[in-house]
Image 1: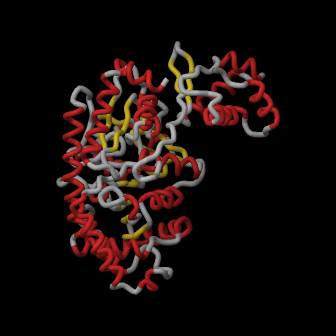
Image 2: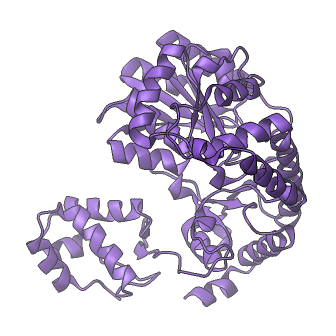
Image 3: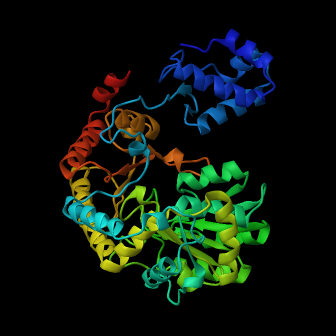
Length: 463
């Protein structure tokens, strides 16, 4: 099947939108209405440029934009093919977010205690107090309890530097707004949380990819960026990184902290998974508190819907300045969520939930290591996602494998969603958590193993 080029020509003539963006839109539309289907081959750049009356460069940019959106895949010598989108399927929890978001497991053993305690807290609180506007950044008690909790990660943390916020994503949005203006540059790792890519695109902030090795971001590349570019900060996810599961080593953290201090480079330390390891590395914030914004929250160790997170600013003054940006973007954190979290930290439920999530995650990682022992997966013993490189001997590309597995109800995301250097490895992130139980997780892992072991059989099902 080939594109309806007459339809495309008509739309191009009628629109003032840049042609390369419109062509990508038209590819997406034709996939949605099934005029184009997965594995359909698109015309060559030269053929399409002639048919549309456009120059070669414009059509090349259009194909690159379509590839960036995850619509097409191309390889030298074999052409450009439609990848399509994951088919719409009914999910156990009724939400497509389950397929793309990395969520912690939901241990059954603490569910009843959480339910009973939440009911007790709410029944013994004046709800009208919780339904009014509150001081931004949490109450005095919220910030005090948060400060005590965070002191094990960032020593000498004080309540005046802490803000209680509605989720980590809201902190990142406010921080990016605070640190960089449109057109300015923030350094990032070569694989990052997709949310930071979305924020940068929305704010028109340039992301400069810093390559990594087995120990973390390569410090010479980071220092070179500081010397040659006017970079406004460095964002990293240093512990059980999403998606690669890598944890930056002690020596590499010290080197990053040294560069940050020498060049006065703000560090955004997104430690979303930092609570999970029983024994973790020193935070960058503990090594360079003068320039580091330390972020932590409960979406990856308690429940994604709780939407309660903390940020420690380098100083009280900086906390007040960030509060202005946060107020403009999110008004305030939910006082109801803040009340639950504050009480759950005080009465030990957060600690017990962490232990339960660690134990369940460890059991699932062992399952993954056993079932996928023929493949070189990367995992953390207390994490709940794994990183699976895809060998070219399997017959799958990462994007096609993710598309197929998601049609089977398995939470998989291809590497292109995380890449910042436009050169993603052939790999997928597999989430072992979420609303599924351990038996369902095991069955999903067996499906992945079978799909990799018998690619021809599985590909015939998706043709």
